Length: 154
Image 1 (tube, rainbow, N blue to C red):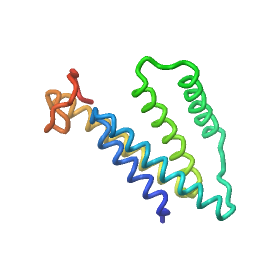
Image 2: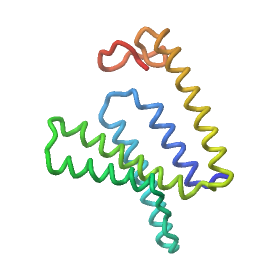
Image 3: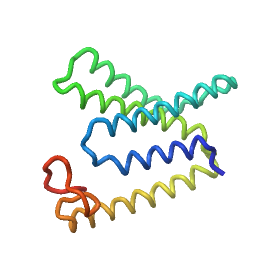
Image 4: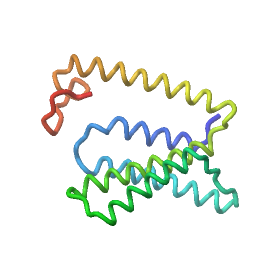
């Protein structure tokens, strides 16, 4: 059975996926804030119980990429600071969520199931995007027009 932390992380990721097409800057900010807050609470609980998180080499590489991006944002001011901050927040939230999931999912059994479910979900999203992109005439979920003019909504 999945822990409440994993379920909360999955719900945040699904909400972020369903709202990724909305161009308002508050939407990706809300996703990043929710993911970061969840991971901060998870880390505080682990530290309070004196259980340190396990850091795998792929996670260390992802965290290093986030730190490199943060250093670039601090040393070289970007032309568009809001999208740059949103990108940094999304990458940081992704690194934290991956740390939470890597520590909370049972590697022997849960990872196989989780990876199978992830592959099935990614395949379903790819098929959905292809069908929607070819049949929706530039609308999102066949209902709404996107806020910014784009040729295709994938």
